[in-house]
Image (cartoon, rainbow, N blue to C red; front, side, top):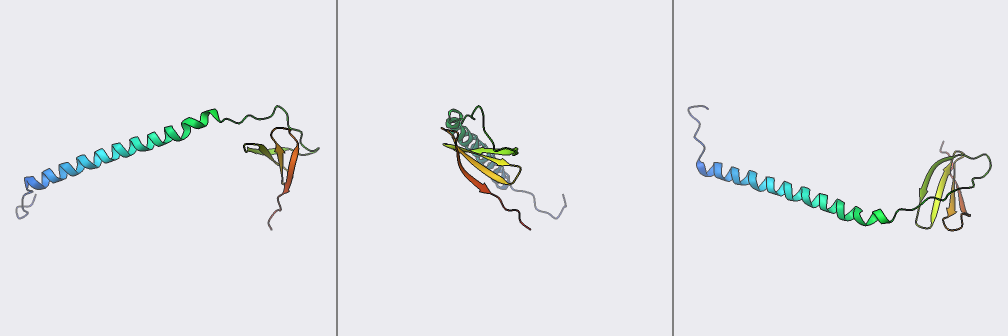
Length: 103
């Protein structure tokens, strides 16, 4: 410390100590809130697992690249740039979407 600099007052040190304590408590409470939100958000979704069908009949010559599902449908992206949307209950093809390549 330089001889010309004023000493730090005890009031300033108490203020800084309280500030650090409050900030630490705020961070701990915030972390607990985030963990609580994750737990409550994902707790109810563990029972909502959608099952895949045992077999899927793809058109001849196509190969599945990706799969996604909704509540009453599932979609398969094929290697020939099509999206095939099937009904979950009956397994029938609902819709075919052709994805056009951009040039």
